[in-house]
Image (cartoon, rainbow, N blue to C red; front, side, top):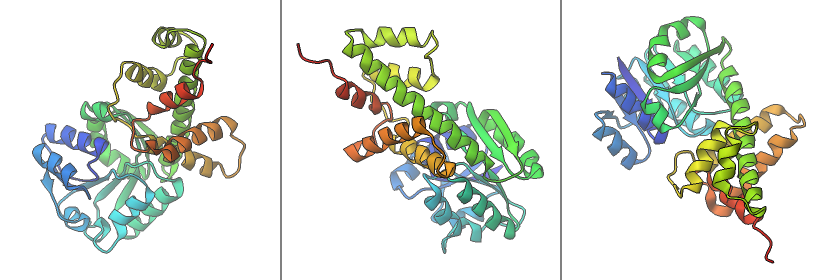
Length: 292
């Protein structure tokens, strides 16, 4: 297939590499020339504008940072929507608000373009391996048409329903729990050290016991081993947890509110572009053992 990908950050580039490995022709656009150079080195074709890219492809994946960027690359003057032929298909892969996903899908439908609200979960390595989770919402005919491609990208494709925006709703619920779990793991490991325990040994117990979470184990082991590679930025879980609270529309979510505040504080402390495991460092500092 001829596939377009707007946004070749960590996740977008990994998906592009996966698709190139499957023999597809992949066309990319990113605002960062360095990211485009990496995509070109992976065998992708770099296109000057989203509109020009859209004219080249059958399916377009949008994997930018947020709702504002999604709207920009689709609907600005040189946006992809102005180049997409009728009958083409767009996958909205960024984590955006349900309202933004629904609005984008409706605007594309007016142009005769199918859209699937399809946010992704997993890191760059899982994207390269085709092991993502995709939460897909949109017309059943579009889902069926795109299913072979979805299964190349993801080992778990969850068909949420026909309403665009429900994929986004599912994703922000998941990511709020991820934020809670990571913030909780950070606090637990900091408490372990405060109590004179070895944090790595404690994490080994936790991940074989009732306190286990995937994100806590993955981030905890990397941080304790001194691995500061940026795989998922603090800013992303800060954004996603804020989206979840906004979608709650005033409902009382004390744990989610506390987790979102922890990530917002990390951003305010200059950690926006750090790996989100940096939250562990904040907790370790806050709960440092008392001097004796």
